[in-house]
Length: 95
Image 1: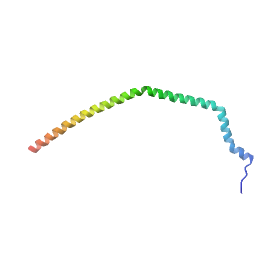
Image 2 (image 1 turned 30 degrees about the horizontal axis):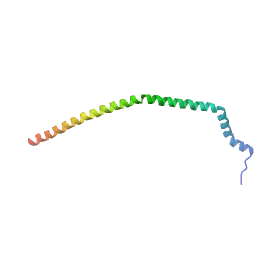
Image 3 (image 1 turned 90 degrees about the horizontal axis):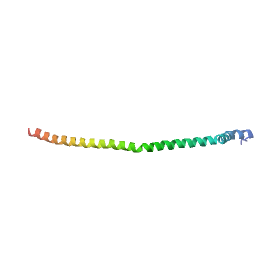
Image 4 (image 1 turned 120 degrees about the vertical axis):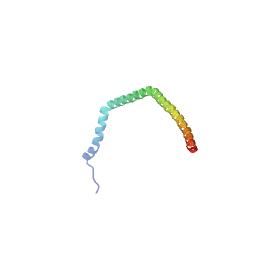
């Protein structure tokens, strides 16, 4: 059997939507101002991050340069060890 909606049921189902619309009309300017302020805050943060970006890039480059130089020293030490290892094997084989 089909159910019939009475006018009070129809108003009850539309009540929250109407209440939300009324709140939006009353506080719409406040929401817009809040959105503008939060957008301004995000732009300010992005601007400050862009100001320090060159310094961060320089620090990263110096750290990588130090790592590369240490890597070259490590490679030279490894080459010396490898050549001594060959000499050591030769001396042990000759004895």
